Length: 116
Image 1 (cartoon, rainbow, N blue to C red):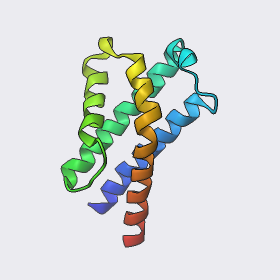
Image 2 (cartoon, helix red, strand yellow):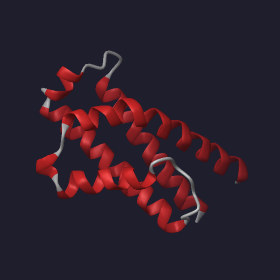
Image 3 (cartoon, rainbow, N blue to C red):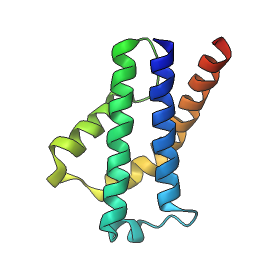
């Protein structure tokens, strides 16, 4: 089971890194808001993050990741309410929540790798 959890953690980390690379160093909301392909790419990575986290919690609900239910809820919102996505909310999540998620995922990966 630990192997599967680690795989999902690496999937989350990869998606976070993709989002960061898509946005580049000079993050600009105006550029994000006006680039349809960029928005869809970011949204897809959030779908992957939410699904991977959902799978992790099904295997081990005791794993603690801040805002895990909100992250899964974001995934569900993007998929099921695709026509009601607010760019400002996604942008806020990118800037406020994604850095913490990255730190937590990296710590869990380090912990799992050191226990293997």
